[in-house]
View 1 (cartoon, rainbow, N blue to C red):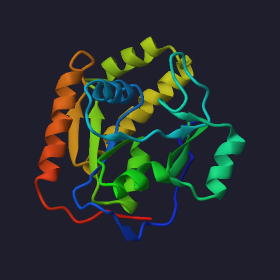
View 2 (view 1 turned 90 degrees about the vertical axis):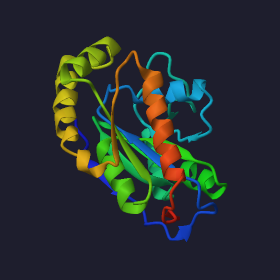
View 3 (view 1 turned 30 degrees about the horizontal axis):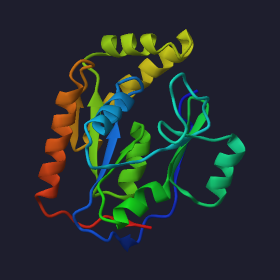
View 4 (view 1 turned 180 degrees about the horizontal axis):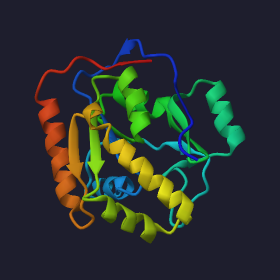
Length: 214
């Protein structure tokens, strides 16, 4: 089922330690290649803290705990909710996803640049809390290409695949939310990384208001 719940915790109130540290929010449709992009950035040694989000969905083949996600039971997820440990969380396609607050606030307080991967509604929630973050939308070359990618993943039934494609069409309408839009070509990951490098360089080269956080 599509995302049915989205909730942020209290808006942040304290300034981060370093005025130069950045929060980069990466979003885009399911299957657009966000995970592959982040994996490539890690391989290339980009000096970022990569936020590991939490989920209650089942682990896919090749995924690792603490690398791709923190895989939690619903009871564990609910406990973190009760303890207000998520910056943003939601139910997406029948599973819960959340961004642990300390995965962002701790590295920012140390002056590190941070990148977090969320869906479009999650990006909108974070923008309401941390509006001076940098928001990047990863766009598929076409919906036909996105469908091919989802089919190759073989992790969704035909009904779920159709739902994700409908959702992708809706998410493209959210482009005004984002500061930058990058087309994700599957065989040009390094080009996408270079574009993100350039975006970060530009952002760090100009004065930005401090990020408020809790």
